[in-house]
Length: 113
Length: 115
Image (cartoon, rainbow over all chains, first blue to last red; front, side):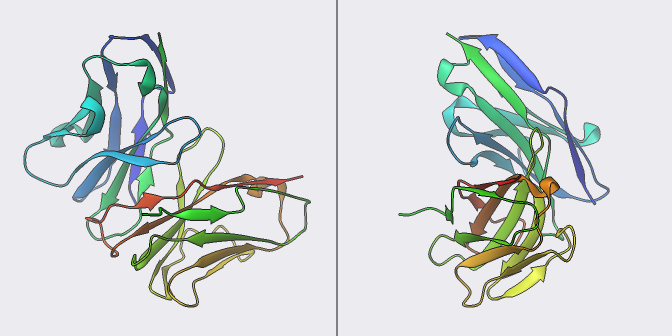
């Protein structure tokens, strides 16, 4: 079974600061990778995904993530955050021979205006 | 178009009672998933359906939990003899097809509190 580790539980930063959230997974086979976001009072929604090809993927709202296979990592980045990026962010993986997502514990991001 | 809907949004019950949680997937989505999210944790898989059949129920914690999807659309998660440890947000998701390349669309969840 796969497991996902998110390094930061809570991140607080000011508007215009850069954001990087760490995500590592453990699994012996190939996985697809996802970042989901949950804004306050809203449901989980997909931010971006990686299946194959260019390891740098771009998602909605200026987010991007880089897959580093040798490090089993899929870190999320945004060069300049806005107050509206305040949310909880979840990294998730799914093995190619499976159908269920395995999520990390999540990182709460608070952006101060 | 409508997304995944879940009812009720909140459910408070007493220890030992029976509860049912309902999920309406996106129309046309054949795959349906249930996850459970405890405080401070990410969602954890419970069960998924392809059509009417439970393709994998390995995540159900014990035999007090059961889920059905009799007509391949709406699903109900049933919990018997609830315990305080069952308190969590129960999330439902659906996708067009079952598989690792299909985005799972999540509903707003049902917050279950067992007193």
